[in-house]
Length: 259
Image 1 (cartoon, rainbow, N blue to C red):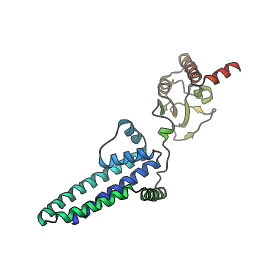
Image 2 (cartoon, rainbow, N blue to C red):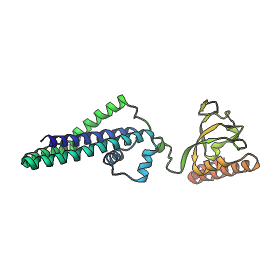
Image 3 (cartoon, rainbow, N blue to C red):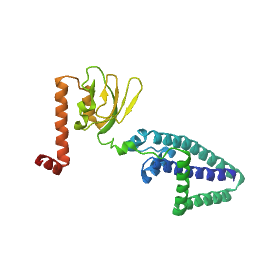
Image 4 (cartoon, helix red, strand yellow):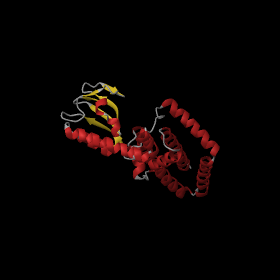
């Protein structure tokens, strides 16, 4: 009997943990359905698709949540198996099959009814959400999704070396925005960080730029050297960006030409 009760408690533990995990993942910006799927997949160790795994690995908070669910899931499954084995062994020796099966069925049935109750489910989610927001820092934004980093865009760190086209020029002179590139910040060699730099900010050798834009363009800029070739590459990138914008917004392009 004790083993059967322990099994029911372990199943209850699994249900609560996966519910906490799904709410925690939802607080990071995931949809409710995706959060539930990922929490259950991690807890029971069944895995998920490549795109979904990237959404977890690229997000530090989600990665910690999934790791905790994996550890707790392994412990819970081992406990359930041990409890089931002990229960079967005990009942086979004592002849209490009927009583133990009735207890097990009633406990699992009660848990199923609890899981299917929308009222109880919403009340539990509100309680978990309130607790997580009070005692954790999970209420964060999914910057991977916000910046569309899975759609050909990226945020990269780029160190400026001697002879680079970027070196010893202001951001206004570089005019990277016309290429579709945004400089989010600059980390100086002396550990000083310049956030949201302006056009007057100068890019020095050994500076590290945190830049956002299309991946092919970021790679090209990283290899762009100073001199006439670098300037021509910049002009070509500006023209290409203008053509892309015109294709995306033909009405705006027509108005611009008319003006």
